[in-house]
Image (tube, rainbow, N blue to C red):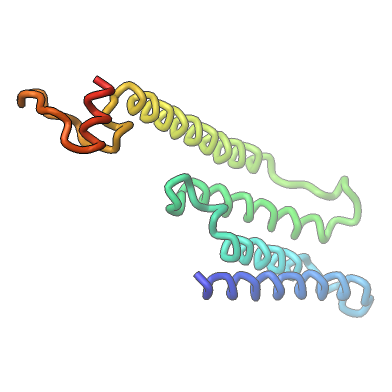
Length: 166
C-alpha cells in the first residue's frame, strides 16, 4: 500500500510539472508552434493516474475490492478529459473547440451502465438486509437451525438468543 501511494504522489507531482511546463511553453513564441496540447494532456493523465494510486478507495466498492465498472468509468472519463484538454489547448476560441458527437453516446452509455450497476447492487443489498431481518438466527450470528432435530434447552447466550427470537 505504501508503494502505491508514493508512486501516486510522484505521478501527481510529475503531472503538475508537465502542466506548468506546458503553460510556460505557451508563452514562449519560438516554441509555440510545437505545442499541440500533448504535454498538458499527458500531465493531466499523470495527475489522474496518481490520484487513482494515491486514493485507491475511490475505485473500491462496499466490499473493499476493486470494482471493474468503477475502473472502466474512471478510465473512460480520463480518456475523454485528455482528448478535451488536447483539443482545447490548441483552440484559439470556443468555436474551434469541437469534439466528435459519438463521445456523447460513449459517455452516456458508460455512465448509464454505471447507474444501472449501482441500482442493481443497491437492490441486492436491500434484499439481503431485509432477508436477514426476517430470519432471527442471523441476528444472533448463528447458522440456520436444523428443523429435523428436537428443540433443546438453551445452553449458552447464542442459543438463548435463538430461542427468544422464536
